[in-house]
Length: 350
Image (cartoon, rainbow, N blue to C red; front, top):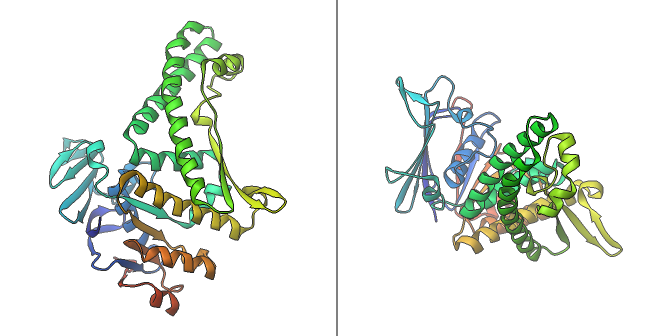
């Protein structure tokens, strides 16, 4: 699939702006705060239905605006997402609207028209950050590709909140232990599917790596494990087993064994592990959808050494790619090796 253009209205710093991607590779150049990452965010929103950085959708609506609109044209179809604060011109409205060719769609019917893989400097936190960052990564990818996973994750998270409330009430003497039965069954049913789907993804990823391995630290959820940890859960008022406790780590194979890159890896090794992860993600998306995703690179050249830059350039030439950069690191070699390039300059005032 090819993204031909994107139109932004009241999106982040943009009042109204259109970007045409007439070449296979497009560089968005400009100083910090010029809105380069905002463009990538809008594209990723069309692909995933979510922002990769906003905790709430309203953050993407321009200050003092009632709504935000993102439109994208891909080959025969026009995709559109409208974000609101719940009201336009005094009338109540949905906070998020999806359209294909001006026809309203549900999210599951909207997703899949556009695929994208994002690589940004903050992805180093997939190695160094907390387990929740790694779980969020798994969820973000799998929710786009597997509707059963998305449904199970939603049901699991709702059930988890309710079960934790029941645990707290039991601790305070306001509920009976028998009230856990329903929530136990719900979490086991959905949690096992979540665990299995994540495991399949990580097995696929590991097949793409050479000297690096992802170890899946799975927290299985079974009736036996819930029973084993019940007293501790009652004391704390929270569920201690299940996919919400999952994690994974990167290990590098050495002649004398393996080392945990989060603890013993150099900065270069950690960035290379993330790069391998993103390459595996590209292949995983293609394997699951039979579609080539758009590659979104957010100011990554400053983070890579010469060897890894060459690896990224080789990948870029195989995909439609949109790259943000201040312009300082785009040297002559990069311009020469990347074919069919378009350069768009952004200013702070847009």
